[in-house]
Amino acid sequence: MSFADAFAARTPATAALFERAKRTIPGGAGSTARLPRNGWKPYPIFMAEGSGSRLTDVDGNTYIDYLLGLAR
Image 1 (cartoon, one colour):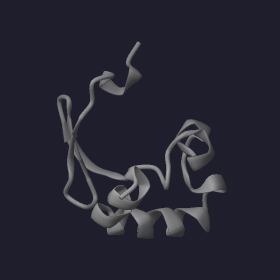
Image 2 (cartoon, one colour; image 1 turned 90 degrees about the vertical axis):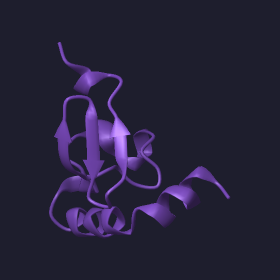
Image 3 (tube, rainbow, N blue to C red; image 1 turned 90 degrees about the horizontal axis):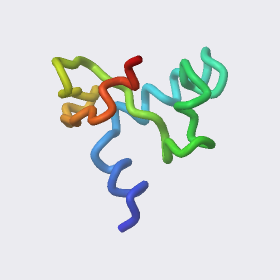
Image 4 (cartoon, rainbow, N blue to C red; image 1 turned 180 degrees about the horizontal axis):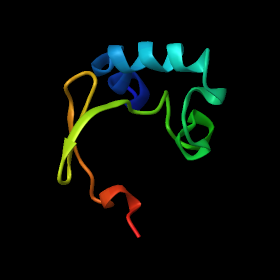
């Protein structure tokens, strides 16, 4: 199974939000850095909440932000 397939399998709410966002936001993301053409394949992550370096997407998956939001 490819990364894109595994990611899509665990992020159905994210996929739905991306499809919705593409109807109102150019490219479906608020930044060109988050577009699929720039590496966010099959689509960018939609976050629901965060605390410190821990982020949770709309599907309930937790991530660690090692770049700390690219602060500075």
